[in-house]
Length: 164
Image (cartoon, rainbow, N blue to C red; front, side):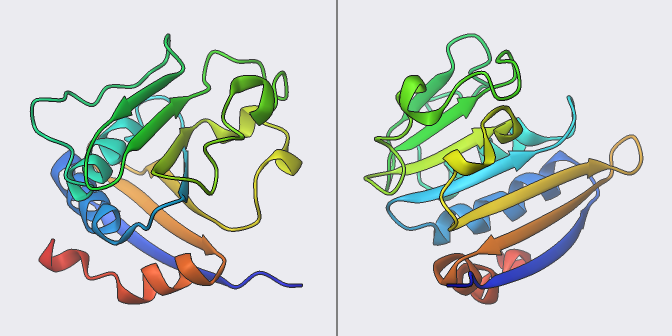
């Protein structure tokens, strides 16, 4: 069975643009969504996660930060946001089950994983939204959304980030 794929490219002129795009994505995420954030240090992954939190209606009283040392931060909202940062794990050193993440995939809430390359590729489900952030200038980022699976293809097709 093949998985539907759709791509959308966006150039962000700063953190506000990145956050606005992520907010539009967050508004359209469904229960059980999986978002993988890829990019080097300082590329804007946490800013993107903050925008997703905005789109998921996480109250402003919650400060969305990268869970580098705690591994997972949980935020209430329209859907619960589980924000995972695997940066400190060696590549391929752990699997979703041993990290306690296997139970979150496809269930209630939205699971966002920074540094998903730290997991064996076979551990990730075939349907997810991949977000690549690549700095192209000091404030500019090239952002690519890659939809794997019909729910995410539909999300990209309906995405109108200019009105977010």
